[in-house]
Amino acid sequence: MENDKIKLLQDMIDESNRIVFFGGAGVSTESGIPDFRSQDGLYNQKYPYPPETILSHTFYEKNPEWFFKFYRDKMICLDAKPNPAHKKLAELEEKGKLLAIITQNIDGLHTMAGNKCVFELHGSVHRNYCQKCGKLYNAEYMLNSDGVPYCSCGGRIKPDVVLYEESLDSNTIERSVNAICTADMLIIGGTSLAVYPAASFVRYFRGEHLVILNRDATSMDESAELCIREPIGQVLSKINL
Image (tube, rainbow, N blue to C red; front, side, top):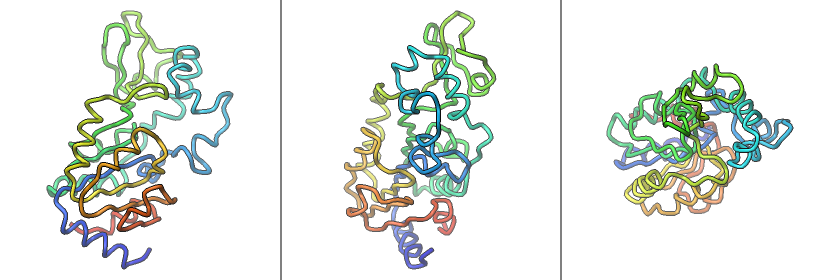
């Protein structure tokens, strides 16, 4: 890892007081949760249906048995723990330097690490609700249920995650965009910036420092002041606060 890039990142963080972190699946790979588009990611694993199809609203409605099989097998990872990236971001918030985390992940690891201001664009596996009465169920209940999970009232229990063909929560969008607009530093980490509309939010950044921590190139690399293509946990663990 290049020491000069780490020093530059350290200097940027030191002089910033309204940092926003925008992250994706690559933040959680060091916790053992697979991403989507890498060689070993979910999109390259073999199922009777492509993951993009299984994780769509239409498929959820028409083939709930297969949806929940995939959901239990691949989306609920209760053994995963926060890695050094999650922990450093929680420390940044505790020090008063991190304004918000905007995440495309549904694993809840940022909250588990201690972050309070987390905008979950795509929801969370830790929230599940009855579509009939609204009763809430946790991830453990969903993992240990069989077949299509139903509430005691007879309604189907749906994960509070945004499926393909579904819209993002408007309040979460507004709060995320506001955070990016007021940030003096934006760190984009572990995301290919290929999932829209979430990826478009970073275009609202008008602050001083734009940093990208991602293994592969992104559409924002040319606009960034600094790009580091190393595991995020390894990079952030070298930052002193």
